[in-house]
Image 1 (spheres, rainbow, N blue to C red):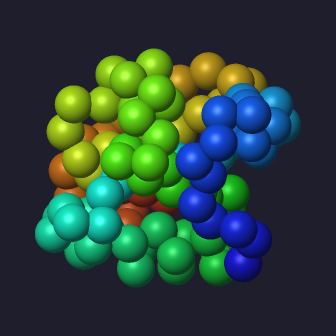
Image 2 (tube, rainbow, N blue to C red):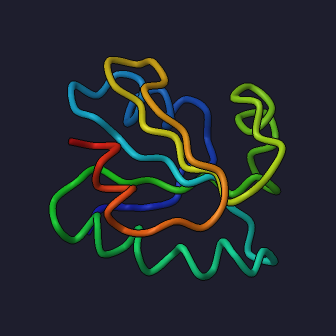
Image 3 (cartoon, rainbow, N blue to C red):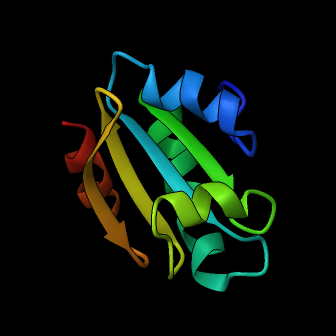
Length: 101
């Protein structure tokens, strides 16, 4: 699995916005219980070959603000550098897979 956490805007732009693939980005915080529940699902999806990254909202508050993150966990699917879909809160793995299909 590649480096999962992106807290630098330049790296975010390179790996997410400039990617030719659909990318899932999980905006999370370590203190957030629901975020910890979602983490294993995100890792499974990454291990299945999908591009998955995480952004710690405490360390990358500018990115969280830029994408209007007000509740976490918040998973955004990006395609062609634009937001394709968004889920706020804990969800099933199938819903997440549906975002990249």
